[in-house]
Image (cartoon, rainbow, N blue to C red; front, side, top):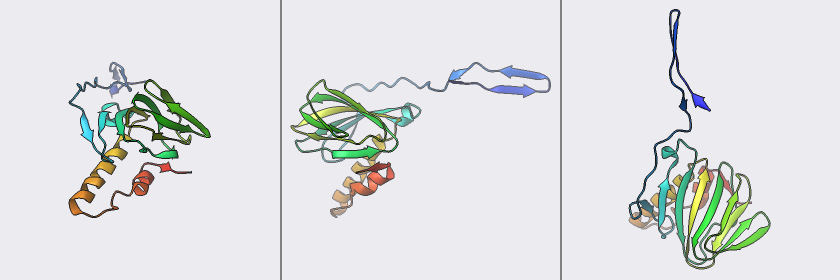
Length: 171
C-alpha cells in the first residue's frame, strides 16, 4: 500500500512520487541506552514504540522474578502479542494449553485469544505487540507506581483500571 499526492491546477495535474505508508525511520537503540521503566519494580526496556513504527508494532523486554506475570488468562482486544524467552523459565498459557518454556522459546497469540504467563524462575522476555501501543500500558503502570511511592499511598497503581484503558480483560 502506498500513498501519493495529486496536485491539480487548471488543466494541469502533477502526481508526486509514491511513498509507502509503512515507511518509518530505522530504530537504533544501542545496548545500555534503552529507555528503562520499572512498572512492577523489575526493569523493562522499551525498544520500539508505536510512535516510531507508525503504529505497526512495539517491542519491550520484561524482567521477571519467580511468580511474576499476568497469570493464566488475559485477553487483548486490540493487539497480537509474541514472547521470546531470553532467560529463565516460564509457564505460558494459551487458551486451555499450558506450555513450559525456557531460553529460545517463542510463542505468539492473536488479539482476542486468552493467554498469560507466570515466571517460574527469575527471567527475561522479549515481547512484541502488533499493532503497537501496548508498551504504553507499562509506562502508565510505572508512572502510577512512581506516584504511589512519592505520595506514600498504596493501591494507586490499580492494574484493573489501567488494563481497562488498554482493552484488556480477564476471562
